[in-house]
Image: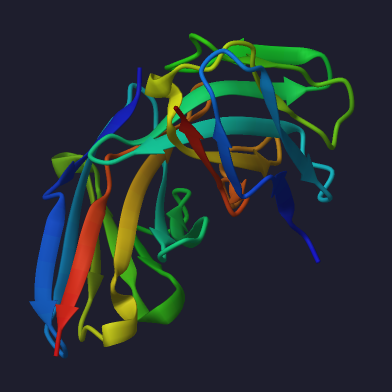
Amino acid sequence: EAQVTQNPRYLITVTGKKLTVTCSQNMNHEYMSWYRQDPGLGLRQIYYSMNVEVTDKGDVPEGYKVSRKEKRNFPLILESPSPNQTSLYFCASRTDRVGSDGYTFGSGTRLTVV
Amino acid sequence: AQSVTQLGSHVSVSEGALVLLRCNYSSSVPPYLFWYVQYPNQGLQLLLKYTSAATLVKGINGFEAEFKKSETSFHLTKPSAHMSDAAEYFCAVGSLGDMRFGAGTRLTVKP
């Protein structure tokens, strides 16, 4: 089944404790992206990657890191999480033609930073 | 730069009534436009997309949207709402660079 898999689904952590949210896709998509969803703000892009070793900042990159060492994986790293990063996070992937079916989304990771 | 604006963060309709969710876009080049739906505790699913082939686009679950260049709009409609349509709906634009999403519209369907 074609899908984007992100883990974990739920995560509670403490301020300053480094964490990684994993994301993997099995569709051989070139583009991968991380979004955060907050009430009233919709989805805001954190980082995206156009292919292996090619990444770029989205609209809200501060406090996050990403890497794209393999085409299928695109982990999101929070080096020192803070309470304002409490949010619902989505990983997504698509082909390199934006006029295709747009992004395929994972099921989300709900992160709480206390 | 490209962006979308969804008018109305909450829309409530009665079962069987017309559903109209509004989206206006801004893009300096011909855009690709999308509507996604998000059911509770799930990711986003593609409802339909506009890629310049036809201005009236039909999607899943009886939804459709019409691209109107003169109004820079891409409103989502469904003739008759069903209880199962209750969800959050997102409009998105993609052309230069990557995709941008609107703030979302939560649809409530009353029995």
